[in-house]
Amino acid sequence: MTYFDQVSEASAFLKTKLGPLTPEIGIVLGSGLGAVADAIANPTIVPCAEIPHFPPSTVEGHSGRIVAGRIGGVPVVVMQGRVHFYEGYSPQQVTFPMRVLGALGLRAVVLTNAAGGIAEGYRIGQLVALADHINLMGFNPLVGPNEPRFAVRPNAGLRFFDMTEAYSKRLRSLAQQAATAEGFRLEEGVYLAVSGPSFETPAEIRAFRTLGATLVGMSTVPETIVARHMGIEVLGISCVTNLASGLGAKQLSHEEVFAAGRQVEHQLLRLFNRLFPKMAALLEPEP
Ligand code: HPA
Image (tube, rainbow, N blue to C red):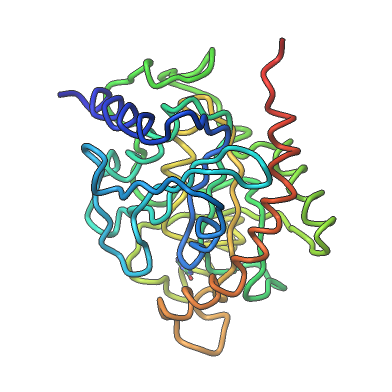
């Protein structure tokens, strides 16, 4: 069975579980940000382990389930607990959930993550909208034969495609308006992805700052790449869970990262409640 067939089978399975709900927005939740899914009323919950071909998650704090329902009245599908390259999964496995969600016909996906803050002035617990990324993970998930059937929009599924607006400008601007209405500022940042699992050295962080990064993390970029390949608009949101290596007084730990996520997840939910109706209106297909 080909990878495309596996994705199709998983997506068809998920569709039957969702019943009449047709999600418009997909959400991937990062470390410590799981409460967003828990806040969905009358959710449909599908453990990832039940979905054919789905890679099981191994990292602590990621429960590995798909939750569907409504946020701000908009039908959404949430991936709670992503899988990471550092767990030993292949680039194809890492992006399998994104492919499956995308195959449901989503117009947009919100990719969230926990990140180390590199820019001066970032506070722990701050949300930052991604304006761009730098891929230093050491791979691109699209290496291999191109599969045009992954396209969910016209002019997608191409071998070579543009990444000048990997993170949708119009979605970012809507998110900033929603944040302002909620009484906080949503800054913009550049996310640099590494494979992990070790945190960075202070010299690496100095180098990354010189390269133009303001955030560092171990996820999101592979998902952004395949989402753009499918023709899905991406909104990226980082939660600054710690100051990057060498910038804070403390040593970095997963517990710290996780705890900071817990502090901000309710703010993220308020943002989504306000943002999603606006996003759904914007994403409305042209007649
Ligand atoms: N580095 C890499 N990944 C991370 C960090 C960090 O400091 N914080 C949360 N995820």
